[in-house]
Length: 296
Length: 285
Image 1: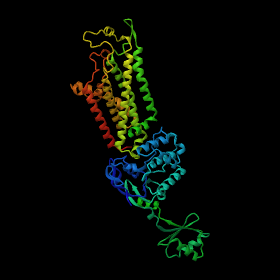
Image 2: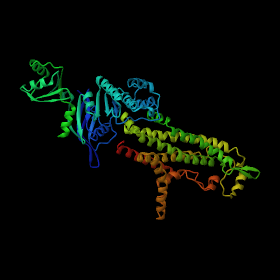
Image 3: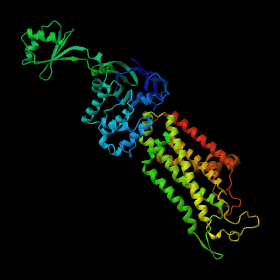
Image 4: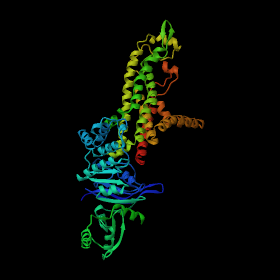
């Protein structure tokens, strides 16, 4: 896979404070890459540097293997922090300016406005839009040049649940077109739902980088339900790999000391005359990983 | 041209830009044409208008001088607000994110500044021609009336008649250079302060601050240096005269001082270079 973005030892200092500290990262084509971290971890600063609005204190980056000074950013669609447009201009006129900067035909404006469901409001001034609409206009601007890469900084920030759902679906549909997407967020669930790869930042440092699919390993824990939970508790204690069990709101959480899959557990209980109404295998989540890393 | 078209798109929807531009377009001719023709009194059987220029030389000078003050107070203000609004709305950041290089962004603003200067100069040229034609219709341009009114001696170089349209048209060049240099300074202040009101205050206060500094230099016998301070130099490209010299042309600053003109161009380049330095060195917040 070709490398889309390569960051080498990038740092940003404000006085003695390191907002980003010696960050190195490689993002390949087709990845949906989540940059995860608590507030103030350096996510937006990192994106600001790679989008050329912040000057790095040291280090370098390159898009598409081209030098930093090249015009490669026209191949990238971005949303950085809040939606920013000329307040007195209409949504359409604002996109006209973006289209001219990106060297894109005007016909494309209506296409992206339809895609983000703002076509009906295209002639309303930007300052009359709701936050969700402003965010979608930002996405429309980012999509104008049909970019190879999308960089989205906290794209669901401040949106209501309906807005979050719309934005998430939009991003997923864009990802399905094979575009590379870089998303920063402090919402773990959001990253896990949308991304294929992730890195965790804290205090400007990269703590971890990996693939979301690697996270989906079994924890050898199950959530089960049946007519009689006490029967399960009694029976499961005799399993050679049994570790512990806990009641969790009308369900039973069972942990094992070794590897066991759902089918084996179901068979074991069935052989002990217990028919389960529910069996959920618990897997490692990004949240577990994040909390573990941050704790350490 | 694309960069200029983008700048046009940005300003065309801006209300304060429209208001200040309309003020410039309307009030400038009003001041040039109406005020001199309204002030009058009887003299030698004529309605004498002391503020009506006596020939094209003084007409061009008066028109460009008044226009330069309009540019100083109105169009500098427009330019400063256009730049600082981009920081205020953070659209400068969005433009860069959309794909502008910093160079593109700065060039766009420079082209806009140059376009405003050129358009203002063309407007002044039209006003100047119209003004000359209008002023030449007044009967008071008779040589003896002028001589008598101003009690001029034999050394007077006041000529009979209104002269040629091209007499004193070089003042338009002085206007262009002065306006460009003034805008370049406004440009630097706007990028430096990034805040509208602060930028306007710093811009106008700089002229006062420089005056105080010049006075200090003069007090210490360094008049020669003080005379070429940037803002003073720019102001002297098209200087404000005493009333008699404005009307009569005697000892008047109506003729080009090439040193001031050349230095103003150099100062304009320096201001633009400093702006570039500031814009590149800083983060775009």
